[in-house]
Length: 382
Image 1: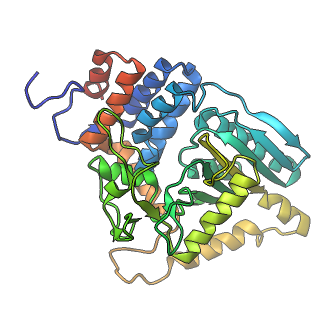
Image 2: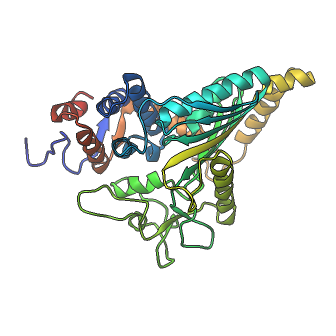
Image 3: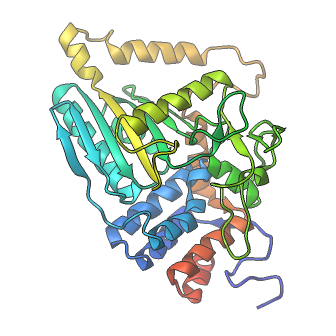
């Protein structure tokens, strides 16, 4: 091995380009070593890589080392099933029992889709879920079933974001996702954190990825900054810890984004019983409140045909795209267009990971007990 190569098989400091299918297989292999079943490990691999394909690197494979740690510490549990606490027809309250988000999240969404398809609407609260990953994935699931959906998420015991006008942590990054299917078109999917950037984007920047905006964070002294280091504490031999760094992420959209984040704490956290970023909770978990509506049943009830939901929506989207762009080389885009373009590009050309991100993944693999030759082969066989 040359001095320019690491034990992971990558040139020191050089980005790693890897085929998405091979990367998903490697991530799945890591989680087989943590005690996850083959089925769950496969779901985790596909979900994390799916986030990278969509360009949401903050919720992609960079999370794998964290997941390994959470499983090792018993914060998240392998192969849990959702428990139904309330079932009153269109209202469901489910307990994820601290299972992996890539298992309990899709299970909860599947129940919501099934109930909405039957009744026309459904409201599903999911409490005590492991990290749910990219929330847009769940809006995409509902849209594939022809359903409109809204998903609000909070993170119990996660204090990362300062409210508008503050430098003190009082909220999680609290993502939201909206999905609207339109017949004959890609669904419109709007998926975003309520902070200027997701914590994972700060982590990606910390590990050699693209920088975050200059207004994304606030230091302990109240300075607005783009330096991701203010979010983390550092100790020898441990992964940077975002939970007790000196600074904070900032809420997006000033007071408006701060307000949306508060509503996520109340509706996804307090209402589901998961808990909030506040002082009452000590165990990490995601809460999610999802609302599903079947537009076909609305059209049928009011007698709409060609001018129903799909026709009205299609007319609007056509008109939206006709908006004159300020820069003709940058046409107007709908939510989800950029993700679609990135997915097509990365599926064709591979996923590029900064060297530090790849080393983080390999560190998680080593911690899980994956053999060195398996780690090296993951890259060389891509």
